[in-house]
Length: 400
Image (cartoon, rainbow, N blue to C red; front, side, top):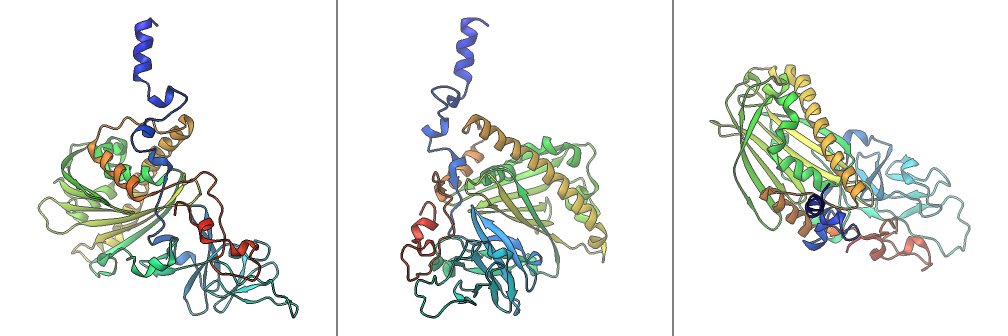
């Protein structure tokens, strides 16, 4: 290699490869993959069917372990997943009516996190913790939601409005999958429809044309025209495109919107007024470093005029969506591995739309603080100010 070639190669390398692994993002607003998702929103952490009556269920949000349980009344509660006594996970506990009892020494907790009973507590003992943190919890759209941020903001924070979920004209397919990548890769993947080459074995050849896009402080929206260009595609793909169950070769208009922190997609046949299907999705970080997320999706499909047609096509549609998701997961997990290996973001992005969504995610998120995986502090006071259960809220909430 000549000196000129070496100089050219060095100039072409990302800045992270030169100057002690410094990332380009450090000079342009910070590395997005080091930005955590904002906690002051409602996030799904489990499907309703996974939290059975009289049973506890382990969940998590950005490294905070959460114990969900469904009481005898059917209500779902969310507590930090540790007993204030010996820190044993409460998700291993036993549900008795509306109370969750630790499996170790049988300390009992109400749904508000307060300890209701310590069976063997001697009289006169004063340094007793009052409980553990309770998260605001709701159940809607077949999902269990928690509010991991400031609980005083929970009442004012709306859940997504999905009227098609309960519409008799639609049927909903629910997705719940773990993906080993930072949540931002997921937003980029869905919003940037120029990656259809990845799905050529499932969708055939698709020509996506960007019709327009707009962005604001907390959103980015893009519209594409999807034109079939031949090739073999999965049978389920035909059932979801254009005229739905009847199938068609006419184009679809795809509208994708990142409305922080959620994302939606609608497919409207070119000559139609209403979407053939709508997708709502949330990417919920699981670990403290937020390099793994759990994707919860609701695919709401309009029922065709032929009775029973959608029911018959359901297995094919499910298979198609799983194939597409598997290909997307392969790509975004590869992106995360590259980030891990390189020590930062070396991406050379050229698409203005993705630059916009990165700006939205960066501006609305919170920094992931080094060593911030200190969790489990209770929001309830106790007699012993040195007790771990009395740790202040500042210890519990990263980036706040």
